[in-house]
Every structure is written in C-alpha cells, then in structure tokens.
Amino acid sequence: MTITEFQELIAEKYLHRDKERGTSKTFMWLIEEVGELATVLAEEKTTQQQKEDEFADIFAWLCTLANINDVDIEKACIKKYCENCPKGFK
Image (cartoon, rainbow, N blue to C red; front, side, top):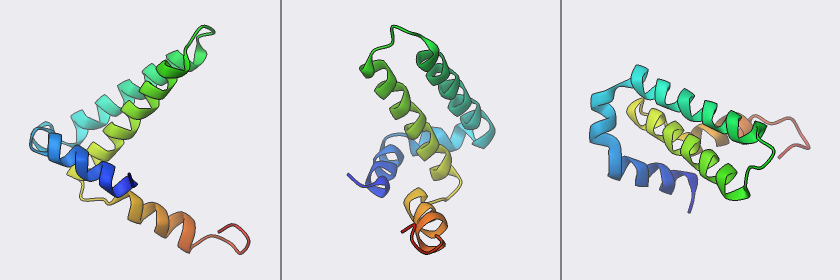
C-alpha cells in the first residue's frame, strides 16, 4: 500500500466525520496520539506491537489532518524530500 492509498482509505472511512470535527480538534487528537507514543517509548516493558500500534495511530491521524486540509502527504513528501534533495541524497 502506498501512502496515497492509505490516505485515501482513511478518507473513505472517516472524512465526513473528520471534516465536521475540524482542524483544531483533529490536531488535538494527533497530539494525544503522539503523547501515547511517547509513553510507550519511555516504558521499558513495551512490546513491539504496542510501538507499531501507536506509530500507526499517529500516521492515521496525520492522514486525517491532511485530508481535511486538502494535502496529499505522499506528493508533499516527494516534493520536499526527493525533488529538492541535495545531490547524493536521492
């Protein structure tokens, strides 16, 4: 699955509800998930599954935030980090 495909999947499932929630509240959900990841990473007895779940949650909320702000994450990343990379970093 590509980043675009995942972002589209999130839009198909949640876009209507996400647009109603709006950017500010969606951003707060993203930050809450970042806090949960911080907690998981700080704990010594964290499982790999717990880490993966929290990273996935953050990515899903990031896609949600991008969707309601009309940002194609894959396109933005390619433009910023691939097309504009210094020589030798592609």
